Length: 256
Image (cartoon, rainbow, N blue to C red):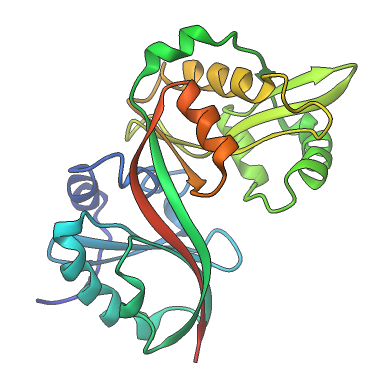
């Protein structure tokens, strides 16, 4: 079966749309906002995405257990043409497909969670106002103090899907998105944090709940990624109606 570079968004949407939660990030990257930063590879019904809107680029390859073997073949064939250094988000059992070409450093197991019980949002008092470009300095300062390992891209403010909570003129909590696409009906929360000293007051749940209510006006599937050992964050998301639907592993790949 031939491996091809796929440029047809309709084909990709059909393949990825069979499991819109597992493939929420890839579906979101079909949107005009992200599409110019993507390269796609396909073999039969399996799809791999290279997102090069960040440095280093990020490789996304997710499969249900029954499809892992087929996706492993695609990854092995694509590996020789990938950049010399990149991040990779791979379903369990896939990393061996690239170890002949890359040295790998583990970044840990992560959960994919989805908002499956939105009724729980009503049990949380929402808080937060939309943030825009004028809030960028305050947002950068908050991330530097509270979440230095973030994946924030200031372009995401243009989606209008970043909410913040202020106290005494200071930004103390924020929730935003990594992916937002009304066209493909998916969103992925990201860059959620609360300033040290303000934690434990429910601000994280409040701003996440407010953002979820806002997102559900325009998308069907609200998802997120969270590190498996971040127990506090997992509990926060469960509180507002998210459940774990899949796992994946993060890796740093460096050409041998």
